[in-house]
Image (cartoon, rainbow, N blue to C red; front, side, top):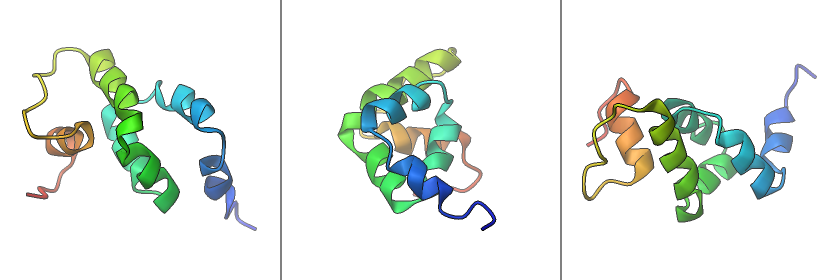
Length: 86
């Protein structure tokens, strides 16, 4: 089956398990994960995932503080994505 559907199964894992996995990713990786499926996008853009994003930024170190008015995903997009979505 070419591995189709495996990402959907991954997204259906318990949220706490996903958060443990996500806690090891960098902000750009989280941003890319949020663009893979609607379920992951919904989860990673939700305020409940804010701690995951903050941990990813802290682990990188040396980054300027988040700009007021931007969410963590928006800030990751601004810093790491090659396209501007203003």
